[in-house]
Image 1 (cartoon, helix red, strand yellow):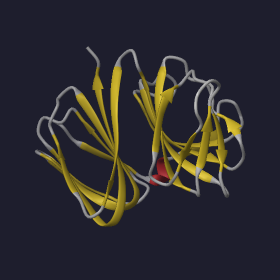
Image 2 (image 1 turned 135 degrees about the vertical axis):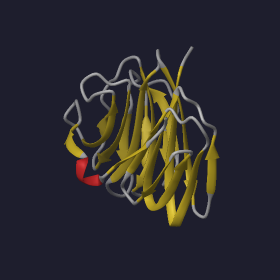
Image 3 (image 1 turned 30 degrees about the horizontal axis):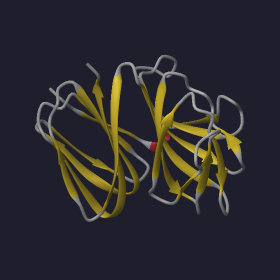
Image 4 (image 1 turned 90 degrees about the vertical axis):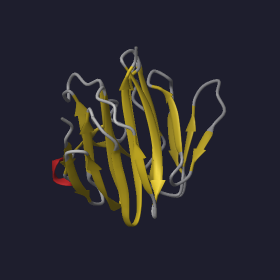
Length: 193
């Protein structure tokens, strides 16, 4: 039986990056903060800084506020993110972020590549989407702006700006309807075989 858990903003924890060069607001870590297989957080950048190294982890950043963020890495072309754009990279890759025109915030999705795969998508209102049920999967929906109504076969929930909903092992379709003017990040995590 699947169920929806809504994580309120009041449960978020803000802390320094592992390398001390920025701030992160941790939204959720599964199964625990110390020994996670995947993690969702908001990173804050107000000066040029290197991202912390996370070996054997893949990560995807979505710029959720700010004018832009330039990502540079040795031997690779620079990538400039504008609002709503994302970039995926290996956690052990040396990456430096330079905020453009002021502080930025990024939604940061990280997962251990040896056990999980992740699909990260951004959705704007008005929109409704339906994800197939998968008893071996997890779905995280983060309301960047606005909100949403979420339904699975045996549960419903309302999601407000800044909140995140988790659906564990949905046995039927997951229906997500954006309410008002909003932007949602949807993360679908599946075990690799």
